[in-house]
Image (cartoon, rainbow, N blue to C red; front, side, top):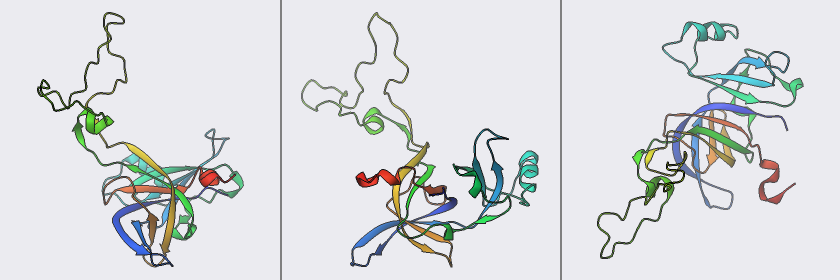
Length: 217
């Protein structure tokens, strides 16, 4: 199956009912038509990809404006690349991609920027269990414990789980189901929660591991 993708704005969560009357939680994404701003090929860039432009921005740098002008675009809020494997199915620069590219029941991956949690401790950030609250535990029940490595090597290893900034990272949620497509209002209803807060841009694309979901070959 050829890779498909579209950028959209996360509007929020709601619920719909399936054919059997069961409640299905969904996230609504407004995916207005994206414009193909560039086609990358193995000959020119070393790999095959389709670059999509979405939204508008008040301020566009001169290099970006010149890049978008090649596709007949004045402005763009976000640019994203969709890797493709079949070069014969690459679209033309300047063409549009709409929600009609997807169908209900399709399995997709959604990429976005997760919500920022600020500075968090180890119990919230890394799911540490903490210490007990019995006698003798004096304001240490949420501490990380020892992080040193004694005299050898005499330093703390890089990557040790500690308190720090949490969230605000690029996150991909895999194997989500497209529940419904509203072509009139350019909406995609995806089952479950998506990364990021309402109003942020998310990238919906064909699932990379859909063929092996549920043990299917």
